[in-house]
Amino acid sequence: MTFKQAFAALTLIAVASIAVPSAPARADGAASTRNIILGTAAAATGAFLIINHNRKVHQRYAEDAHKQAVLEQENNNAWAAYRQEQRAYEQETAANRELQKEIAYQHRIVDQQRRQLSSLHVNSSFAPAAGGGGTRVALESYGWGDL
Image 1 (cartoon, rainbow, N blue to C red):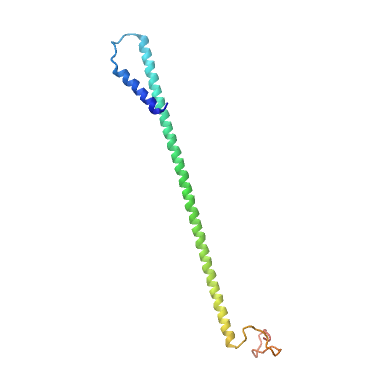
Image 2 (image 1 turned 90 degrees about the vertical axis):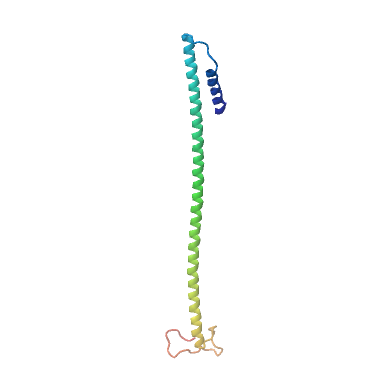
């Protein structure tokens, strides 16, 4: 029996007991005691049903609050994971920019050295001349020997 059905039955009993015209009151102690016991039992049953209903309602509210908390935690975890991935991507991008700067610097140095070598009219392959011996590039040696 559901709460609504039990509550409707108790309400119907209460209305029926009030609406039915009663006979003149008798001074019967047994009937009075019986009515007090029945009224107390009906009130206790009604109170029990109300308390049980309230317990179920609060239990449902607690379950809903727990589900909401779990969803918020998952949502927060998803946002935290997203932010972490975003930071990792930004750090990777910064590292790539630094590598690009390093490559550009090395490229400038290589170009500068090529220009210097070309101004000296040195063969870029650094292969010895066909004449057999090395070609002397400078009159002074700084420990590099013959090229």
